[in-house]
Image 1 (spheres, rainbow, N blue to C red):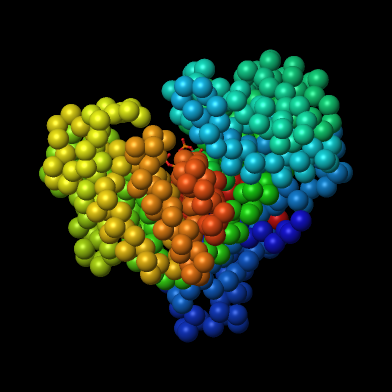
Image 2 (cartoon, rainbow, N blue to C red):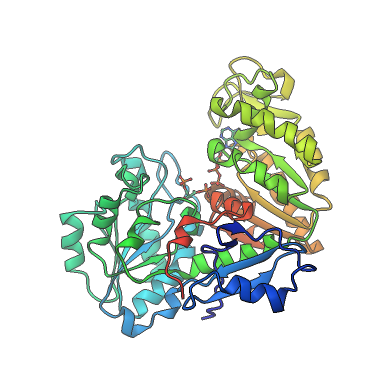
Length: 462
Ligand SMILES: Nc1ncnc2c1ncn2[C@@H]1O[C@H](COP(=O)(O)OP(=O)(O)O)[C@@H](O)[C@H]1O
Ligand SMILES: O=C(OP(=O)(O)O)[C@H](O)COP(=O)(O)O
């Protein structure tokens, strides 16, 4: 297993300052920059220093990986594994509609189990309101994961406390126990130290393989590392960081980001930073209506993030100042209700009728997005263009997916990230045609933004 992991930790920071403006022509990279940068990290920490583009030097502390641990470290040990098993489910049947994230978790789990570890597997699912909700139980994951691992996955209906303690005490070497949705406790998202301690109480060491949640500083992604040593990265986390960092730190241009979906409040905030990196930004999905409302347009009953109106307005102005193309749909498919069989109309964005909601981008927008993508050499896409789960509103998403699939053979790098975006690309039958399918949407965007992901930063350095 390759161990050339180069993860960002307290990276890109020298004495508290970003290294972004170091010009290689002024400071010869190898002779002067290297010792200066090296001196800012503790001597025992392995680091990697490299050029990223013309005016950027990246310093990365190399994180410890699960592959650094062998049988002697793992046999009989209780390993707390945080994965991102937040898979899309059919709302009625609770069947898994896309298992990409479960499949992606398998290599780390197999490695641990083959080395005789007792695995306590943890994840969140959806966004429960801080207490148990049946629709967010991890139960649907059990069968799929058992099939993939070729062994029984046990499950307990809690993630802390006596039930877990008793299930762990009867766990044998090479067995895996799935804990219940960690977000059934509001303390998880608050990164509460007492809760993290309780999560850690039944384990000896920690593996974080949840790339999709690495941008969240939660108890199971960050807090537990204070109580479990070693705390190391799983193979998926390692693979995602290696790929994404390589592709986006010195991207082939034109570089286009496509942002859509429904997590408007967390993703709209990324757009300003994307303007510094990308040549074009295409906006679709539920995010567009916040922009339209900010322009003073009527949006009917479409999804709107009221407290982001000012930001949306500023972003449009900023794009003009910076000369970045910020493309929004010019027409939308509206529905009279949020339903697969709703009545629909295609309208200009200036003419959304009262009481109707925009659930997909329209045909004119598809044409202009396709044109904007035609010369792209790197594309990062997170967030579907519409409610693709309903066939009537899947056209925009499928069209963009097909456009990207045609770009890859022409030499473009196409990266799709996010639980639902990946499900959409799978549904469109073009996942194989993309350069990289990432298990993280928000995480990929934050990485692209240049942020240090807290779930990665907290891990032990090599
Ligand atoms: N116009 C829209 N209105 C409401 N929801 C939308 C709209 N467009 C897309 N969505 C929804 O966005 C969801 C995915 O959003 P998000 O979680 O941000 O993406 P990802 O999981 O790929 O990161 C999908 O379930 C889709 O139905
Ligand atoms: O689905 C996820 O993120 P994504 O939709 O950005 O890919 C992750 O599981 C994180 O979930 P969260 O955005 O509720 O923290």
